[in-house]
Image (cartoon, rainbow, N blue to C red):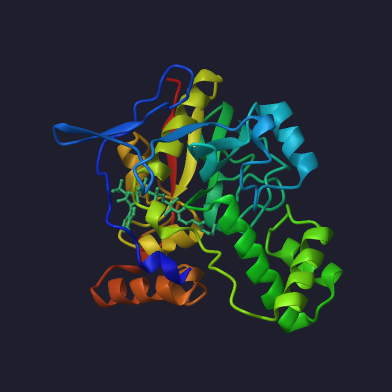
Length: 327
Ligand SMILES: CC(C)(COP(=O)(O)OP(=O)(O)OC[C@H]1O[C@@H](n2cnc3c(N)ncnc32)[C@H](O)[C@@H]1OP(=O)(O)O)[C@@H](O)C(=O)NCCC(=O)NCCS
């Protein structure tokens, strides 16, 4: 994720996108003072945001969505798997969404990548009384949950990410395609086949281990309001589909490297969209694991700078953000 350091200057600030009644943002605009700025790609092309349809799957970067059978079940059960941002025909952002019946339901098709409570696999103790079957939220009905959000992850970048991952794994564990595929699954990469891995191996045999282009999200797309627009379109979807609430994890403010690494918008961005913070911790809570070194160097650099500036440990945790859609 080193490239994320070289973020483009932010193009937009404040305000939320205008979403039409179909939940589609044909040309999302954001207010900046008196001016209205269109949501655009780094080269000025308008970005559109809309719910993902089954017919678009070959153009959406599926990366950490679950396997195809689970995706089909998600479409059948919840209508869409999330929101996508488009620069023309190119998908440049994705927000994963999962529907869960509150208070007791879970969504077994929501992969537990370590941070997804309500996935049905595991109750994360850090969420105290806010997991499935727990009364903390006081909500009943369908909850629409935001999982990870990726901006600047295009199909081409995803192909490069896989090429780099396969080559890196091959050097660690050997050039056995099936073993490499197993390791990829452990990294939550579900949409790469044995044939894809074999092709990367063949390519490496042909060309040697020459450098493959970067597979990290294109930093030019970050900080342009695309993540916020994906969330707004999702809220609109949830409203139109009878959901009682939208829930999301908000990264701590002022630690954008963590937000980019975890794929969660800062909690402040959710607050601007009308979400409230659900208190999920205590003031005497210690530092989260990721703030104690279980995260990449660029995340730790920001953590250490914030600690040195006197920021208290309990602020280094994600917040559960809740937008009630019904009284
Ligand atoms: C986290 C992410 C989804 C945010 O999307 P985005 O389009 O860049 O964000 P937006 O422009 O809508 O801004 C959302 C918030 O982030 C903040 N932000 C955006 N860029 C920032 C930057 N360079 N520095 C500090 N804050 C920044 C904004 O200020 C805004 O917060 P605010 O409303 O409180 O001001 C996006 O950066 C991303 O996809 N990162 C990579 C995620 C990824 O693939 N991770 C891999 C592992 S899952």
